[in-house]
Image (cartoon, rainbow, N blue to C red; front, top):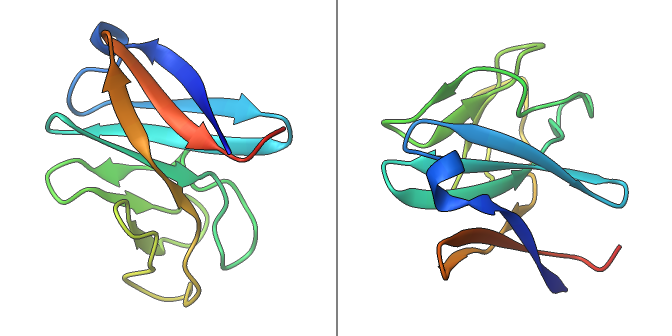
Length: 106
């Protein structure tokens, strides 16, 4: 695992998301009211993109754009069907004004 710079914090204000790629892994990095979360951009229901859909910043929940499964951004666990398997989440930190996420080595 290695830390990866996402962007300066002012480019990811509360209520926004940024999708980043590290090797073959796409990750959505979210700002939930000042708390940063990162989740794999892959719905466990059908392996489609997850982070391109809507999300609920007040609850830190992402909604799959294909079938509407909802996932908790902190744990990656599904909150509704059709998904029933969790997706990976990753540690996020703010260091010297830069949002960083810890991801597997590419």
